Length: 90
Image 1 (spheres, rainbow, N blue to C red):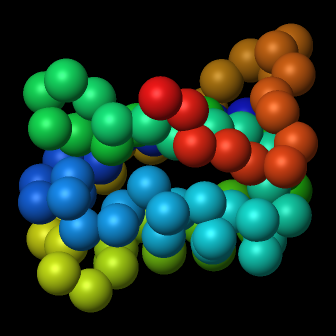
Image 2 (image 1 turned 45 degrees about the vertical axis):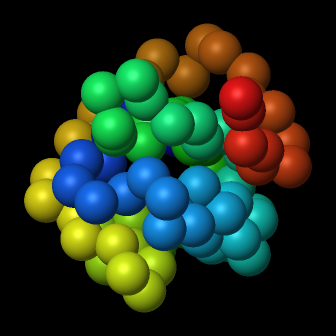
């Protein structure tokens, strides 16, 4: 299963992308994450539903010093291959 996500709130300048990277890699997920020009953090992730559920929970909580106001989460068509291991994109 593949999903796209966008996290809004105080999520830039607090290590959020590196937090997402560590959580995704620990869960064995494929995908990527990057900062958005609007101050959000967004990306795509793929893997088993149970691993994605754990990733969702982690993204919702965020790292220390972050403040997640919203998390948009949407299923994607499984046709696209995502990078493995999970990566930070510029």
